Amino acid sequence: MKVLLLKDAKEDDGGQDPYVRELGLYGLEATLIPVLSFEFLSLPSFSEKLSHPEGYGGLIFTSPRAVEAVELCLEKDNKTEVWEKSLKEKWNAKSVYVVGNATASLVSKIGLDTEGENCGNAEKLAEYICSREPSALPLLFPCGTLKREVLPKMLKDKGIPMESIAVYQTTPHPAIQANLHSYYATQGVPASITFFSPSGVTYSLRHIQELSGDSVDQIKFAAIGPTTARALAAQGLPVSCTAESPTPRALATGVREALQPRACC
Picture 1 (cartoon, rainbow, N blue to C red):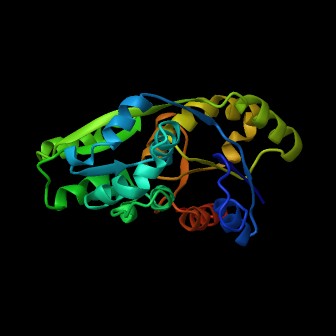
Picture 2: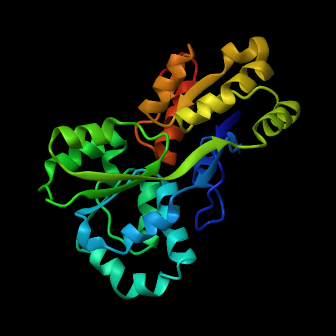
């Protein structure tokens, strides 16, 4: 049974995307099609902030792109050596909050110790941060231009200082339409399609509806989390599955259940 994942490939140590592997364990043939591109912003300003950990109470990462922005800052400004010698240790003396295991893994690769990765989404992470001993210094929050305001608002309401900086913006992948057309031409209408972000819904849904035609009602639409599920529902689509957590195993379990007769997840 063929399923479509609207995300870019992220190979793990085994050389395969973990979502493709997990779905394959259930006999599902997954294909990846990227629907988003990212442009990085304000890196000089962000690099300057990263150079002064003494001014912050910690870091918040809610997306892999924000971690990539850190890597770019270190590379562009030749700060890798100073990061390894001193900056990394200074940031590790503070709290580094993350959402999701994928982001946590990237943060670990740059040498930072993480907490909160099991929260699953920004709302739960905000609750976790609010439950901790507050810092008098602001938390530094590198984010995208489309960030949702739930986390900042919850922290503000609790009197926890935070400083946001937009370090990337999301744009449609230039080959969305061509890649989807090629998939449908060779594979046909998939049994299930998983969306990984509200932006992905915005940029790809129209093409999917046009290519699927009357068969769109047969597709089981899945979401990686509640925010994406709400974006699908806002477009009038039935959401057959919302992953219990943003992990390959949780998604694979949910999609398999959704595709079983009379199942719902």
